[in-house]
Image 1 (cartoon, rainbow, N blue to C red):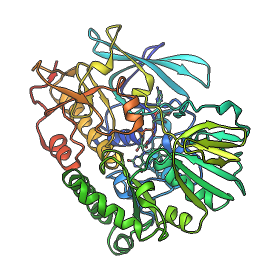
Image 2: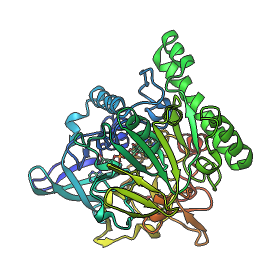
Image 3: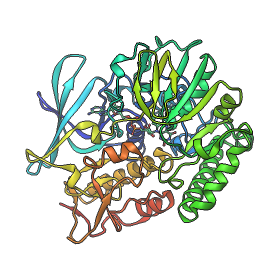
Image 4: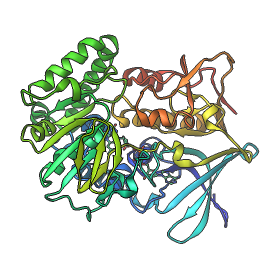
Length: 486
Ligand SMILES: Cc1cc2nc3c(=O)[nH]c(=O)nc-3n(C[C@H](O)[C@H](O)[C@H](O)COP(=O)(O)OP(=O)(O)OC[C@H]3O[C@@H](n4cnc5c(N)ncnc54)[C@H](O)[C@@H]3O)c2cc1C
């Protein structure tokens, strides 16, 4: 169905990152008769894996669980660089004939549900043709990721304007950034810093990792020899299945044991990394966080790369606070001064819910921070839509596959029963709520005011557990008393 001004489509997917491409594949596989479009704000697909260009950019998840369930990861690297992830996404797009379904440069800023028409109006701006855009659809899948694409997070550093060297946030990295033979300071201790430093160390004169507080680090091999052998032995579909379950079980076990026995896990992690570091390295100061494992995401070191940079004296770790920036250096609270030709502020992302899209129901703006999420995939009172959001304690994509499959199940169920809309509603007014992301990381705390909440019990509680979610989303009945159809 079409009209001259607005285009009507059964399902609109917003965003062409790993989630949006995955959602489109599930539409092809499970709802082949439905029309769909992907509206992507940028000029390329890939989202995160197209945006970040800093040296060494890679996954910190194993690729068997970060890849889709339905498309085997056949590359030999278990931990993959960004380029190969993007290649995998491009291959998927080709395989599922999605290129013609993606409308690039279509930045969406508002969605408005009409209760009389039972449809969404999706509005935005076509940055290429410089004109407003409008679409109408029955179902929406928001696959916008979780952070602000325009800028990363940089704290208000004292005296930064006095600094004469090059200062950059990794989100803005480009090929013009020259670090050869330079003294580089990387501020931060998260996944980005841990990834960047070994790569920079190869060409820089020296790299200093300047952290306010330590993070948990775990070493993983880049290649899994046993699984690579398995891929040669049996069809890749089966090898992928086995590889996924190996890493799913490992992750669930490690997360659970970290929560149950944090002290033991803490000392295990310390003992593990000690063997790769120089004898005189001060682990207690630099790699012994005050919080418990998995209170924040654990960072992955690959093939000891960071520890090798430290052992080869190409990288020094400094745990201190910044007092101020000077013309050519950073002065620390301890009085120590770090000379720097280049400073990289690996200080994190700015969280942004649903790509900043305003949600309206019958022209009335909804404050999403007051809403509770249902099964970690829909919002209370928001009809015919899913917010596709992955795990924070495991591979993002594991949850994406489950959510998209479930949403297709709902679409097919509604078709079968000739229904027009659904909405999830809290009937019990006493559902207690809590923050939806159970991590104490800075970027999560900064965003607590804009994110929806979760309830303390099913189905309002986020499981953060693939097996529990699989049972809930794959096998349980759709009609559960909380989702209402019309
Ligand atoms: C450097 C880095 C490494 C990471 N490594 C891992 C990892 O190993 N494992 C893991 O599980 N997670 C990892 N993550 C988290 C990662 O972002 C997710 O796992 C995953 O890539 C997110 O995919 P996505 O498609 O949901 O979002 P994104 O990749 O952010 O893609 C969202 C897309 O939506 C588009 N979009 C957003 N808003 C709008 C709008 N209003 N209108 C139109 N289009 C819009 C964007 O342009 C983008 O293309 C990493 C993150 C970073 C930054």
